[in-house]
Image (cartoon, rainbow, N blue to C red; front, side):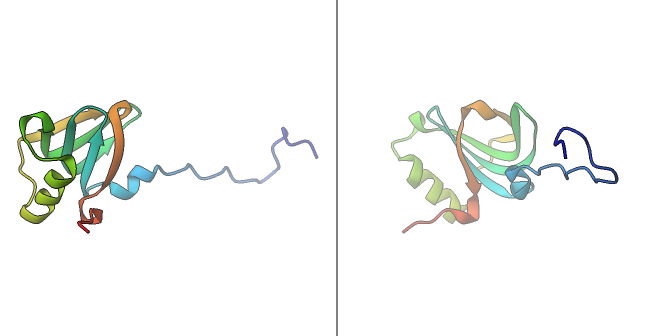
Length: 105
């Protein structure tokens, strides 16, 4: 049977859900290529941007602490919101994880 010919009564493949769907509405940590880190609630995303609400967009050049220590402190004391909404370019993202998945060991 030719693979290019659709089979009768074949249902279309379900659309692939993005791995980001698992993080929607969760508190996340987004590590960026630049010396910035963003913490907040992942609201939505598209092909180019990730929207984070109640966000802490932190420039690590403004403090003497490391990225890891800043994130660990935020886990312990809470997110220090400085933005109601921020859009992050997906091309700038190195890593994204749930805030609750951050380990301090």
